[in-house]
Length: 286
Image 1: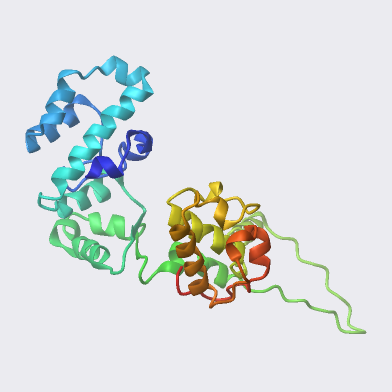
Image 2: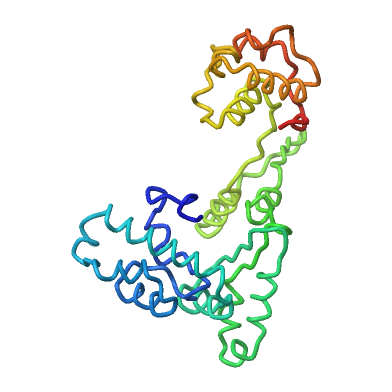
């Protein structure tokens, strides 16, 4: 099942090695012989046993395709056995806090279970009595996407920057010469102006052509790039009238029966010009 969803060419070894921590091992992913042997002993995996028999350290260091294949086999096995193995979250936390030394923990999902568990870990005796809680607590930021999205996206920094005030000198009152900034003050000014890492971008209406192309690509199970705006719907269905009628029906649901007559014969760009943009939300079908 996993092999049908994950292909070898999708595996980026640099994004896995020393970054991904499988719950199966509670240690950072690696393609070394020692790491693979550890996983094989823990799981008894036949594919990993075969991988170890043909393992070539020199080739691993010189052949990126071979390295990718090794990482792929290991990843599939780790994920497969992870489904039926205990979650070693306490050990994983220790790796994150003590070995990797993370500065920012972000829980992605609908809740904040893991982030709360991490806070409780920092309050535990193991961390408070050894002084680790104090050293980590001052620099570690614990966030959850369900409640801290503004901070994760640095929007809080953007909101904290005050608007510049325009001051006009009063008539008849001499204007004081501007004070010369000290190097420290200048440095602080530079730091403050660099604080916002993002800017507010106005939302734009969803254009009908984007929706039409996306719905057709979804129905035909093909890439969006293959749906040319210069062609009508009938050119994409290969003479299958049932499929053509289904696409037209989907568009009628999406645009509330706002389609012109014989929409299947009109090029998509021209067809979309006759439709109203979706202002705030997507239509019923999308």
